[in-house]
Each structure stands twice: as C-alpha cells, then as structure tokens.
Length: 396
Image 1: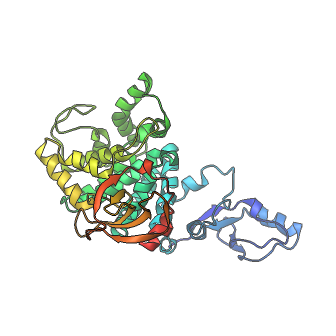
Image 2 (image 1 turned 90 degrees about the vertical axis):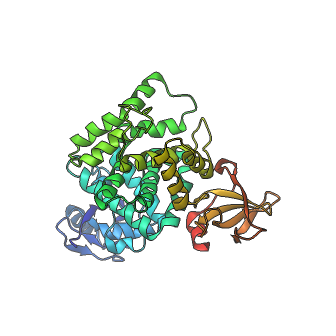
Image 3 (image 1 turned 180 degrees about the horizontal axis):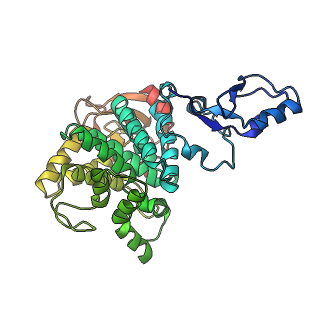
C-alpha cells in the first residue's frame, strides 16, 4: 500500500521539543523520527520549509488512542476531508467500535457538509465498506455504540442517523436475500439519503418548535434534491440514486415525492431502516420510542410484505437491541449489550439498582432466568447514568 500523508500542525514543532510522530517531507522523505528533537531555530526553519507531513496511518493510530487531536495543520483547506474515510488496514486493526464509529461519524459529517466531486464517490465507497466490515465483525457492539449515539442528538444527528440506518440495512440485507450489488448500493444510499438536508437534519433535532413552512418545503424536496446533488458529485449507480429519491415512498402510496406503490426490496429495506432510526431518536421537541415499540409498530403494519420485513427485523435485531435499556424483574435497570439466543432474552448489564442508585461496577444479568427476566423497556432519556461505551463493551 502506498503511504499517504497529511499536513502536520506546525505548533507541534519546537526547539528542544520531542516530536510526537515521524515527520516527513511532502515528497515522502523522512526528515526526523518520532522522539527526536529539533536542535536549533535554523533547523526548525529548514524543517518548516520542507512542508512537514505525518503519515496518514500514524494519524489514525494516534486517533484510535485519543492522541490525534491538534496534529493536523490548520488553514490547509479540507485536510481531513480530503483524507480517505477508512484508515489504512494496519491502523484499522486497533479500531474497535467504541472508537471506530465516532471517528467515522466525524468523517461522514464533514463529507456530507462539504462534498467535493473529485473525491466524493471514492470516500463514500470507503465509508460504506468500513460500515460493512464493522457490521460483519462487531454487529452487537456496533448496534450498542450507534443506538447510544443516536440518543444524543447534539452529536450531529444527520450523520448518526445515516450510520445507524446503514448498519440496520446491512444486518437485514443478507437474511432478506439481497444480492451483493444491491447490498452495496443500499449501504451507499443509507449514508447519503439526507445529503440535501444534512444541516437542516441536525438543526431540526435540536429545535423545540415545529418545522417552519420553509423547513417543511425543504424536507419535502430533499429526496429529489438529494438525487440531483449526487449526480453533480459524479454518482452514476442508478440503484443508489433511485434509493435516495425513493426512500420516503411507502407501499400504500402515501409517501413522497411520487406516491409510488410498487417498491423493490432494497427500497423497502431502506425505508424501514430509516423509519426505525427516526422513531427511536429523541428530539428537542419529543422523546424517542423504545426500540421495542418501534419494532412492534413496524411488525404490525398492514402491508403483508412490510409485516414480513418487520418480523425479520425483530429476529435480526432482537426485541431489545444492544444499546437500549430494560427493567428487570428484580427492579434493576440494565443496558442491553448483546442480542440473546432468543429475541426476548438479551445479554444485559445492570447499571441502576432497585432503589434508583447507580451500580458502581455494572453487573452481568442473565435475562433468561426468572429473577432477571426483562419486564419492560426503559426510555433512554429517563436514565441518568452516563455510560462509557468502551468500558461497558469491555465488561460485556
């Protein structure tokens, strides 16, 4: 693999200051190794004149352990945006879901807000493949992280919505019998279906009032506007484009923009994933539904095919997906960390005792046992305990 480089922030350089990374020239020549020190101001000026860079792989490794902040040079345009969304394979090995999804969220947010035609398709394809890799390797942990993230709209709701919809679509696509080509297009469409209203999507999640007439018009127009924008970004996959245009169409013909009734399986899966994520996501002006309620509502839809797909969602995600909260028979509140062998028996960690006090060390609970059976769901906004996803997943 050819090394790629990013502009190094000049403030990490200084006389008699150990370097945090290997420093390279813009031609790929090693100037100084990590830990070395610049000896004189003359050497520092010489180093700056060579446009110091750091390897992209080094940047992602440091990001994965929380040491990448401030390494990239300001004022160089979209340095991060121009970088591939997926870290190199070697760096990817250290990125588990608790680190990978927030990182991918930041990259996707940047791409959706400042898309560039010459790199857009490549970077979205990288992003989509990363989603597929995480879904395949860490399905439960990925659901946990994203369902936790979507419960906090201040993080940037549009990108979180897109990532969780892409993950749900990916998990449903194989048992639904979707061919690989359609699965690839579905992933890309889930990530970009709201590209024409990404900023508005974020704003609406934090807005306490109902959408204004202008906002409603933008919402109504965004499927077709999204397709047109993707075409200007050199997207040529007709399935991808069609899915973005039709992601608000419904089998009963009550959707928009065209009121279609004859929907393909990829269209149905994208619509269901989109609706599921929207329903469980809290907004400033309303709470979110529990995943159980959202799944049951989809299961009870009148359309027979939608009912079948609702049943498939229950079998695939479980009645209590990872990241959601439940009340146990002994009075404890627990967070679901794994799907169980049965849809109603997830693996969970107790985080609040029956008296409503936080449990210092979350305890594993077997919900298949009578004492710790799930008796109800708990809405995320009522849980006052802040969770560290990385620590919770390590305990799980």
